Image (tube, rainbow, N blue to C red):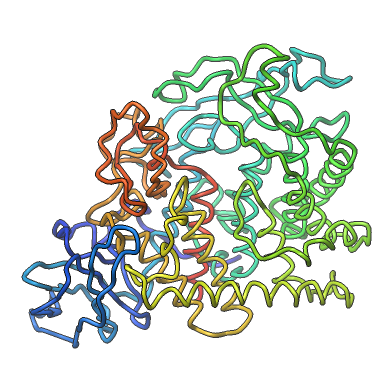
Length: 583
């Protein structure tokens, strides 16, 4: 039986959460720092004087903190001072004092373990179609909502075996974001990025117990949680032709009510080529990683068959792109929920072919994946999964299942591109306002930037560390996590349930409607978004339009404060990998 780390209370308040409220001028990781990592704080001031660090337990001054440089924001012109406290290595709680103001911080050997567990546990809390039980969720328990056993086939999704109005069962899965719908494209990305991190850190995740109903079995909790969503995804494949429905949704978004109070009819909507390729990719990846698993003994073979059927359908329907505007002109009822529209399926095809080649060794898939070698490195997002395919080649290009000279060349080519990209990232840190390799360009802020920029770049740097063993890349990933956890322009820790100045009002229906003051813990906010698409009427009082300050902790702010499974998945993948490396 695998050994698991027992977490006595997954939602226990961390030591740093009980600390005094953060002062507005000192910005620092509000969760915890590892003894051996670099440690910096940023002060909203041109100069930093009377700098000291005090050990809270003993009351003695320790270390030699110092101001190392002044930074200037390239867009706001704000001057800030970077403080180095790297020589504080003994575990404990400390108080940093600068210019008469103070900030508490913690140093401990498992700095990111609790937050990794809680961000993974968040997926249990957003499960659909089951009761969320008090023994696992405590005050966040809730009754079953959206059983999805009476889902209707929309007019856009008909096939010879399933005419319009056919009732199908499509239960389980995760609620996608602030809403209650389920989308294949985003689910595939979310499962994919977490499985990739698991593959690189199996021993770590195999020990990580987050207290979910499946925790007593022999399978890692991350895999158990992913399986809950994979089971739903399998129900989204039309058994008559292999195509995959784009989404399961109500025609319109529900109000801010609890799941049990939602009563709109739910539909499966049009089969799309992007959803079907994404489904093929993640089923092939999951088939490989669940091979030989005793708890899910039948899954690997079933997932392989499903992946092959999906790929074949997608190859025959290259123009089946999801265009909700056009769909609503042709079919009723109109659908006005999230689109996950994407007019280019070439990246989804590359990912599907990559994963199927690694699973089967069939040259047909190698030929389809070959063009990836000509692409520049790019960060993975739900809308462009080329980066996920690249990560697979980089990590597995030399595996026994992909050992031909051609595959070795693809892997080596992409490794070089990833390292060049990573080095370019790290080159921006010495002049960064917040001592990070990300967030140094205004284009790096926007919808979901904390995941799609900071976390995705963190994952890239972790792959660079895996390739080279050079700790500078691991340190870069740590610096990006520090930004998310408080060392940033707003001073927020952007993960609910952590930090002294934490996101409290995410755009998330359950958190807004459950009657509990605290939000559901472990959720990553989207982050600063200068587009402010939710503020066209001017009713939201954003504090700033500066790229890195354009954030408001308000439930109506879907542009800066929504949550989403793809964002949380990328955070879990990055934090877990960092924690595994630092142990």
